[in-house]
Length: 365
Image (cartoon, rainbow, N blue to C red; front, side, top):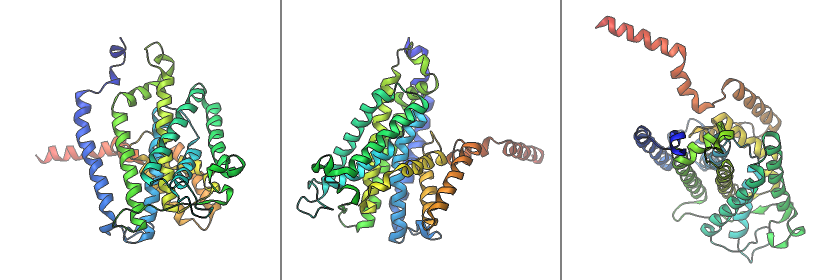
């Protein structure tokens, strides 16, 4: 009954045929990004000039913010759940990997538990996913404003615990509000910046592949059904709470992974970096790039990092422009920059131009 009632939840042959060029284009883009530091073809912009460490570092920040944006996109764009704990989970990824992978015999600002980085990273991301999943139980029953406030409070709680450090539990080793130095992981044969670049790109690749797989299968279609017709999913045998919990968990995993990549690039984590302004930054990445658009988070991250670097000396002006950008994006471009090509193709003047060109071609023949 359920299968007949919701046939759109299952992949059709046409969608499988469309998936082949989609996968090919995805892999091609990531191969291009992996080779970019040795190609030196975007030197026209110093912010993203891959021939030097400054540009590579900014691109690594782009990848890190895009990872968080992909998870945020799944939660907000597909399930329609406005969970705002992402800044706190981002902080958990940054501080968690820094504490676990730091040497145990170092001074206080760097001391940790001496775990290998590639053990600390998945442990923290899984822990964040579990937190997101557990938070989803009460949050999935809330709507709108109440959901946003509850999840925002969770994010603030995580940052507050990090700031308190030994007042909560001295085993946290977060160094309180002073900040924490982040031990750097080096890819063999690469310097620090190139290592961060490749790590962040690898994190984005894994996140993007998981996003494409999940959204092209039943999970993505069911999340859309939960988002659009939540009241009707119960009688059809679909647990909206279960799928929202999954979205919370996956989004939390991506946020922690992004925080770890950001910390590797920043080399230092401070609680002030994860306050409400980080949530605003990630909202800019998501909304300006395009909600429910595959490449929207990457495009939004490019826009944000470019703007942040250009206005890094005037923070007030940066926030003013970001606020105006969010308002304009919601009013004028609700589907984000990633939807512009399709909107242009579907616009009346483009169709009129195609019709006129078709008429000229027929006349010449």
